[in-house]
Length: 112
Length: 113
Image (cartoon, rainbow over all chains, first blue to last red; front, side, top):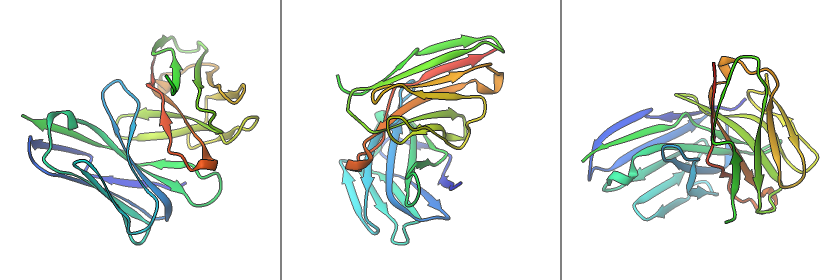
């Protein structure tokens, strides 16, 4: 099946720093989604991207749908302690059952 | 409150025991999904139900069965639990017709000893 490669797997940063993570795929997707998971909770949707080249912001978060439809990135500006968690990218299959395929996740740790 | 409800929150089983994880959504979504989450593996699809009355295998279906009882409920059953099934299980739902995003329950942490 399709796979997404998400990097980095983990990040250790200082509060106030900017964060960047990305996902790449060997296949194209129609939709890219970015989720955040807090400890003990299910993933919560942060940003949805529907068109190649689309750049979307949600507060301090900015995500882009790559022009080739095979990649996406998420940036977090001026990180704060509540940004800690695991971030997942997900791509919606173009064909068939249109399942969501998830990346392995990026674990973000912030030192105050 | 509208959303996806999973029960139980935590469960410990002995090898060979059986159990059913329950999931219900009240958003009238057509599609429902079961994922498992393991460290470094992300979320892997076990089974999904594109609509009421249909179920299909995902990426890691072995050792599991599912039932789409009605539009609201989608259960996951472990007939004979194995230690390799120790994981966190998430149910999710989505309305494909409206291209709505996947919404997750809060998870079930399962340990098989």
